[in-house]
Structure formats: structure tokens, C-alpha cells
Length: 223
Image 1 (cartoon, rainbow, N blue to C red):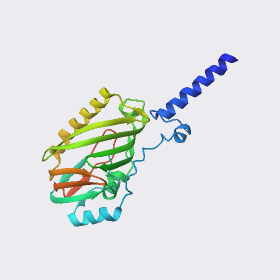
Image 2: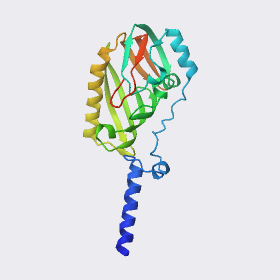
Image 3: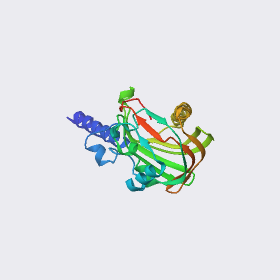
């Protein structure tokens, strides 16, 4: 009987540890330990009115059904329009992609600071062959390296409540920059003159596409 009790205690401790880590979702326990949702960054609430005003001012067009605009949809672009403004967090958080659930990624947050940004989201890596699902958090800086190129430097990365080891974080940073290097050059209408993060906003100067399309959301696809 004593051995059974010890085994049950060990199993319970293991389940609690997994729930606390956030790398796997454990019913009820993950909710109690705050790992069933993305980290709250304290960013501004979405401001649909500000975003709608920006869309109208720039004359932006959306050529696909609204539900297609997610972080798991391949996007297409056309046209070009000048943009020289500081966008508030509320405006950014009202962008369609931040408000549409997508396969493998959901509950996306972003907060801007002077010179850096924080982001968090709920991700499910099971479709990619990794039995992990939970909240991811990152802090990074971004440097403009060309009209259609930027370099991301990740200073903090965590999966659930577990900090990601430095070598793994470096691999993630390399993968992010590799994706951006191939993706940004293919965005028609994009030209980055300057990009800077301020407290509560992002200052952009250059041009952006005037027309946006998005495919059907699918696991493994990215904007």
C-alpha cells in the first residue's frame, strides 16, 4: 500500500509539474496554473475604429473572405501606397490576423517598447511532429537591413513557464530570420525606409501593399 501511495504522489507531482511548465495542456490544472492561455503583456486593447480609419485613409483593399486572414494563411499582395505614421498598439491589435483563430496558433499578443517588442501566443506543435502545446513568449529587437529586409534578435524566449535554452533560442532566431529573408522580398509594394518601436507603438516610414489577399487557413502555412 505504501508503494502505491508513493507512486500516486509521484504521478500527481509529475502531472502538476507538466501543467505548471505549460509545455503540455493538462485539463483543469493548466487553467489553474495560468498556462492555458497566452501571457498577458498588458498591451492596449484592440481599437477597431482606429484600424478602420487607417484602412480608409490608405485605401487598402481585401480580396479574400474575412475568415481567411489568419496567421496560418498564405497572403498575396499587390499595389503600393505610402505610409509614414506611428501606429498604436490598439491599431495593430485590431488587424484582422490578431483576431482570427488559426490552426496551430491563436491568442496572439504584441506590446511595443522603446527599441523592442514583446509577443506571446498559444501554439500547438503537434501537427509539426512535436507533442507540445502551450503558451510561447518572446522579446526581440528588429533592425532594418534593406527596403525589404529586417534582422530579428531574440533576447528572451520561453515555452510555457520554461525558459528556452540559449542554443535552442539561437536556432529559433535563425529560423525566423531565414523565413523573413525569403518572405519579405516577395511582398509586392513593400519598401521599408525606417521602422522603430516606441512605447506603445511602432513608427513606420515607407510603402505598403494596397491590396491584400489570403488563402484558406492551413497548418504549416504562414502569412
